[in-house]
Image 1: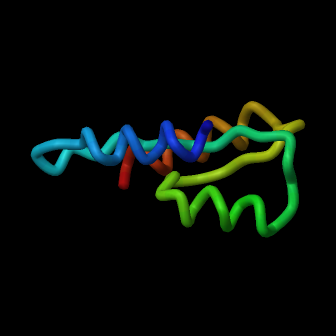
Image 2: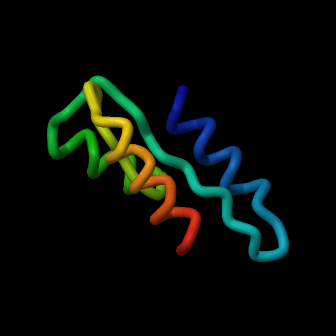
Length: 64
C-alpha cells in the first residue's frame, strides 16, 4: 500500500514541484531501505528512532 501511495504522489507532482517522502518503518533490513528508495521515496528511517535523527532527515530533504 505504501509503495502504491508513493507512486500516486509521484505521478501527481506537477511543474517540477517535488514532495519529499520519508519512510518511517519498523523494518530495519538493508533491503527494506533499498525497496523504499527504489519506490522513489526520498529517505528512510527505522523505528525506534531518535527524534533528532528524524528532524535531521526532514531538514535535509526539505533543502534538496
